[in-house]
Image (cartoon, rainbow, N blue to C red; front, side, top):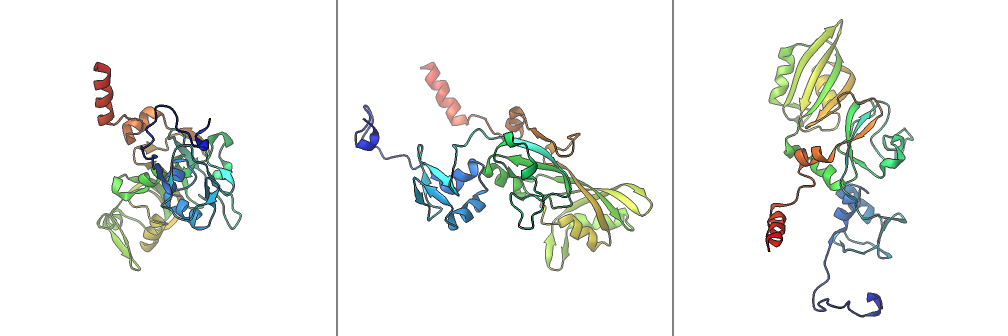
Length: 272
């Protein structure tokens, strides 16, 4: 007879409380539906259902075996965390749906990739390395400036530029009340009125590089992200997607490692 009929499986402690599980926003993030913040928006809009009922609060907990759906589509149990490198071309926006009808990054990805979210964004005319993952929690973690990761770019500018001008960015700069942190910038080459720069920063605010260089009298005509922390664009062709090997994820992110406490417990059980 099933548990729904009111009987407790043999050997189960009837007094034991049911596992509370995890908060629904985190559950949806791990399943790759959206970041935790965006998952909370979906909940507020009444688009999330739990065991057939509309979820009314992010404080809802999901236990093993529970049924969750978003906009009528069942949410599958989160698979192993995966991370991908994508060479974003210019002319596409980093969003799942664009109200202006512009082409998006996600509609051009291979269907076999499944549901993924981006780690940060690149704007319409920017190109280069964009990290994608099926784990919204990982995306949120990698976006935080506190991880100390440099985002490195090659930038083509038009205008008079010299090293002394760029050196002031290392101290940070304030533009119209907006404070930008330390930026490292150097000249790689010049040709006529154009120059190629290498620019590195840790914050990555919206259109930060374009705004800062415009403040210095420079027009950005091309912007390519070449690295995000330890992950490099390398020779990845434009528009291509390549999965980061699980070994690299373990080394760089600690994902897939067995916690020390669990390792000790398993070791003790093996000895016993």
